Length: 205
Image 1 (cartoon, helix red, strand yellow):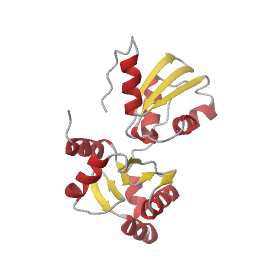
Image 2 (tube, rainbow, N blue to C red):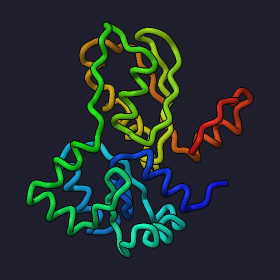
Image 3 (cartoon, helix red, strand yellow):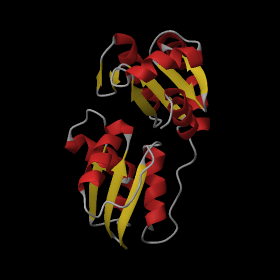
Image 4 (cartoon, one colour):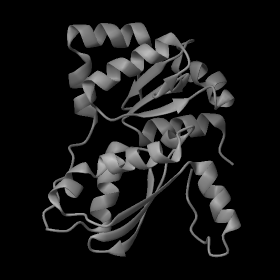
């Protein structure tokens, strides 16, 4: 069983840009978190997030690691950028966008007429950095299962839209056709795996 500190360090290591906030991007639960989300949305750079209201142990522990007492907290490449005021100031002076752009790997360009399972996984993880991706099927007919903390508190349609947005270009170009998407939070996936007689695949969360 991982400690809270280990989970935080893992989140920071696995997500080049991550926002610890109150609420979720579609429904912030404090004005400062809402302002930070609005600024990040303007940059159009993908980022991960953690709702600290739904993770009280992380909410309590993170300030001791970051030495920053309030939320939201934006991290880039494992380093604290700051809270809402600093994010807003950096956005205004033009230093935020280059920092975020440099942190995110360039989106790969598939070279063939159809995508492999690895291509799909890479594209999904580009848009949803903390995602675990399972691809079944061949050619253009794929079943894509995605597990991510970013799905927390989102309705089913929003979860699927978030995944489909990462595959917008290959869908538009015809490199993907018949795609079925299933999206779960880590807790939902664990419950599904536990209840499934064939649930042999172990997912690290």
